[in-house]
Image (cartoon, rainbow, N blue to C red):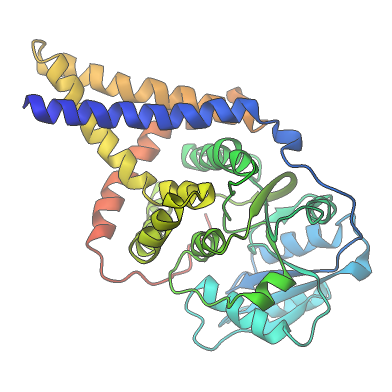
Length: 391
C-alpha cells in the first residue's frame, strides 16, 4: 500500500507541476499581442464550410461572412455539400456561395476537406483556405486578422473559438470554459519560439502552399488534431490569433455532449496509437512543438490517472478519518483547484466570471464525466461520424 501511495503522490505532483507551468506562462504571455507580425499584402482567401443538412444554421454563418470587413474580391465562399437532403444548397446559392459536391467516400470532415482541396487545386486563386463549421459565425475583422497573421513564419493559424451568447445551460458554459483553457493556456503558449498551437476544428486557416506541399490525407475522425500532429512532425508552426474570433454554437445538452466527446476521445486515441511514438522520438531530439502535442495527446489519460491517484493519496493520508469525511476531502481537493483554474481561464479569455458561474461550478463534473468516455473508447473498435442533433 505504501508503494502505491508513493506512486500516486508522484502522479499528483507531476500533474500539478505541469498545470502550474501552463498557468505561469499564460500570465507571462500577452494574449492580445502574443505573436510578432510584419506587414504583408492582403491575401486571397477561400472560405470552406463543410455542410451536411445544415439548413437551420448555415444562413446565419453566410450572413456574417457577407459582412466581413475585407475586400469582397479577395475572398470566395464555398459550401462543401456532403450528402445533403435538405435546402442547404439553396440557402448557399442565395448568398452567392459556390457549392462544391463532396459526396464520394466522405465519411468524416477530414475526407470532406481532402475532397475540397482536390477540387480547388487547379481552379481557385486563393492564397489560403479558411475552415469554418456551418453552425458558427465570424467577427467582421476575422479575415483582416487572419491576413495580419500571414505576416509570420506560420503556415497554419487558429482563431479564437468562443461561444454564441447567451450560454444558457451549464454544459454550454463548460464548453466555453474548455475552449478558454485551450485559448489561454495552450495556444497562447504555443506562440512562443519553438512551440506550437493546435487546430481546434473551426476558425482556422492554412496556406495553399502548405496544402500543395503536404498530402492532406487523414485517417482518424479528429481531422483538426491529426493535422496538428502532422504539422508538428514536419516542423510547420501553428500560431494562435486571439483577435480572429469565430462564434460557435456549443452543445447545450449533456447527452449530446457525451456523443460528441466520445467521438473526440476516440479520435485522440487513434492519434495516440498512430503518432505518439513518432512525437516522443522527435521530442527527444529537442522538438518542443512535438513535446507539447504529445502531452496533449496523453492529457485525457493523464487526468484520469490523476483522479485515481488523488483518491489513493488522500485516502491513505486521511485513513484515520471516517469514510464519508475522507470522500468529502478528496472531492474538495479536486473540485476547488479545478474551479479556480476554470475561473482563471475565463478571466484570461476575456469573459466575466459571473456570466459563467454555473459552468465554473460544474466544470469538475464535466471533466469527471470524461473518465467513463475514455475507458469506453479504449475498448471501442470503431466509431463512425454521425451528425449531432441541433439543441
